[in-house]
Amino acid sequence: METLITIILDGLQYSSYLFIVSVGLTITFGVMKILNVTHASFYTWGAYTAAFFIGQFSEMGWPDAFGFVIILVSAIAVGTVLGYLIERGLLRRMYERDEVLIVLATFGLFLVLEDLILLVFGVNPYFAYQPMALLESVEIGGITRDVYGLTLIGVAALVAVLCWYGLNRTNWGKLLTAVIYDREMSEAMGINVTRVYVVTFIIGAVLGALGGAYIAPTVSVTPGFGVDVIVLSFAVVVIGGMGSIPGALIGSIVVGLMRAVAVHELPEVELFVVFAIMAVVLVFRPEGLFAPAKPRKI
Amino acid sequence: MSRDRTIPGLTVALAVCAIGGYFIPDWLMNQMMFGFARALAILGLLVLWRTGLVSFGHALYFGLGAYAVALLDINLGISDAFVRLGVAMLVTGGVGTLLGFILRNYRDIFFAMLSLAFSMVLYGILVKTEALGSTDGFTVSPPTFLSAAPEGKYPLFVLICVFGWLAAVLVQGYLRSTLGRLTTAVRDNEIRVEYLGYSVARAIHIKYVMSAVLTGAAGALTAMALGQVDPDSMVNWTASGELVFVTILSGPGSVAAPFIGSLIFELLRTYAFELVPHAWQMIVGGTLLAVIFFLPGGIWSLFARALKADK
Image 1 (cartoon, rainbow over the protein chains, first blue to last red):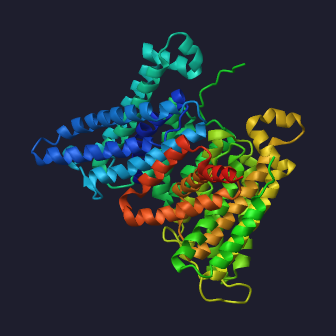
Image 2: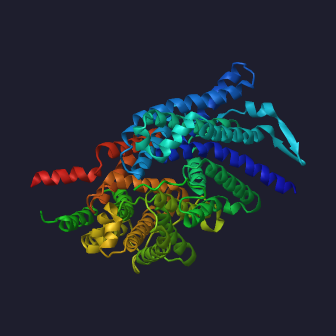
Image 3: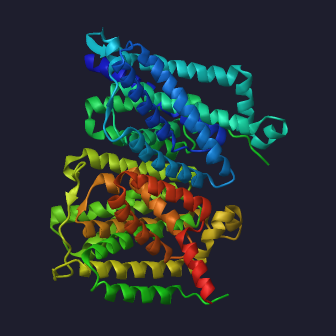
């Protein structure tokens, strides 16, 4: 019983984390048809920025609770700045090119940004445990869990609700849907597609950075720790269907729970199981479980 | 149309390398071995790329080839270079044929993602299985040739050069055959190719198996040249990314391009590591971006321009 609760909590926590990171990736793909490898850089930069400032402000004697503000502000700042620069500086020149080439270009940029981290933040790990220590721990069904990890589930739920609301209940969401279905037609109808692209990309980037910033207090932030995240979120996004937000949710839950089961019951298959699911889903549903319907163009 | 000088050119290059290799210092020979061995994988990716397909998972075959060599060595004590190479190619050919049945129906990003998934499955198995060396991998004993166990790396160097020459000549022959010429036709318009009476799926399947075998051979030769195998630098997705990177760097223009591109990459890596150890990825990334934007034909297009100017 205790193992079961641990598995479920671990799984949900990990799913939430995966969801926050991969929902940004899937939004970017859905709107712009770009599989963005630099998403891993948003994640890493978000984590480094948050960890760095949490450390700084803590030394200056600010209350630990301020850490949560830092997390949010770093995510927004990193996402906006990097997102804007990358969309305007690089991607804008590439929309006419082959999809796969765009992936490679973002891969190139990802490599550059990885090393920039070393130049800016150095090679030593950062620890930003203050927000996590502040929340202490709680007992659920006889198991002690730290509250910070549990808040991750809340944050993910909030992100999911906001995404759903933004897409389905706001004017902006309607514009976005139009652009997703037919870029040229929406341009003809007077939608400023260029602006939609910039904003979408920044939203995706902020979400990626938020994933990194929020996870930073629970880990030691070291060089190269974004590398594994990006392939995992690829798996999540592909399993759910690229461009689908419900898909990203289901994908995260599947991957998160399966991984938790594997870690507790059969650690040897931990990595294997995620990509085996990805392969099986792709084989039987080439577009993923929840691929958005494509309009047929003649 | 000018006469094709690829094969005479390659043959001259082989002779120069094989004879010159006897006199060059060890470090340069090592670089050339790694460069030319990897070039085989790039040659395989080039065949796919000409159809418009990019695989983000060819480390699967690179790893399979390398691990085939290591496992033969450790479990059966087989050190013969030809047997090792043959087994590696058989294994990768088999796996490639099986996966090809699935992958031949995928295009674009889905092809890339599904290949990535397959390669990460292998990576997941390797890093977590103690019997397969886990994250440490294995060391590989130096190769023997038939019954001879020569000193030094020169024999392996010659083997890599000769094998590279053979592979390049065969791929060149393939690209000039009807089946090979379908390559670009498939990229441009699959439906028309089908109307002409050819099976697109079969054409892609054949290319896929070719690239798998070539990449497997690359892995096997690299394992022998390096004397060790490990999952992180050979099977992880970053290894696949590196292969794709060198393919873009080399350019699709000629079967000679992978050898030049791969060697340049190898030298660049060594010097960059020495001069600016923390900026290596930045150099790779920057080069990738520069090639995509300013040199879509890769390094080969520079050579092609120079060759044309000669005439």
